[in-house]
Image (cartoon, rainbow, N blue to C red):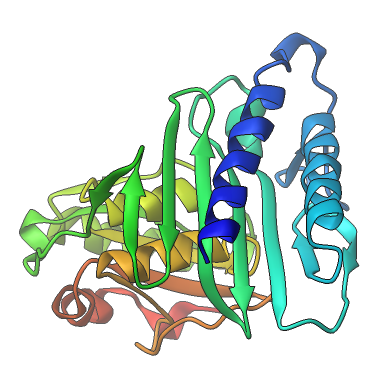
Amino acid sequence: MKGYYDFAVKLVKDAGEKLKTYHRESLVVTHKGDDPKDILTNADTELSNYLRESIKTTFPEHCIYSEEDEGAIDNKSEWEWTLDPIDGSANFSRGIPHFAICVGLLHKGVPVVGAVYNPITSELFSFEKGEGVYLNEVSVSASEIVDTKKAYSLLRSGRKNEYKEWGGEVLKEFLVSMNKVSNFGSSSLDLCFLAAKRVDVVVYGTLTSQDISVAIGIVRQSGGEVYTIDGSPVLHSKKSQTIVATATRELFEKIQPLLHKELLP
């Protein structure tokens, strides 16, 4: 896997240098479909093309999936690269330095290597299955916190109006039960923060797990887990789903009653 790992790390760093050349004043900011909250910039599209072509040139037999690319490459291979060129496009478009480039590799649907890179802070989270998780080449792991009163959490209900009631009720529960509750706006970085003991709980009302598969792999390799609201491990899917990531299973079991599953659409 070392060759794949080195390739992924170099690719996100090279893409990060390209991304730093974009300036807010020259960005073309639109949105996907008819949802004005689903931000898309010209940098998303151009970086997606760069990542896809780099992988296609180096590993022409592999499949490629990108959040911003409707023309995914399906070579019927056991190997699939998953990409999110800018995870946190809304933050990026506003000049908020919390966004990341995500490149991961799945083998038979399981994340095996990958990297998540914030080019503004120069923080690189990376992993290789069976070898560990690293932040700028220093080994990191999830916390062992089991007490909600000590837990830092990130909660995001999502853009869809039908999740607002659910999100509001869960927020009330978390404000009472958690030490801190925040919302940063980049799902991959949020999950990487869990893997590095910066937070202990990450909850998303709706999230497509496929394009940030690398971040899920990072959480699992760090000792944490990414669950469905029912408590089973999240599978990689192109469909949106509710996910709950925690540093420990005990912490998940304590917050599960706070998640108001009955209010989900």
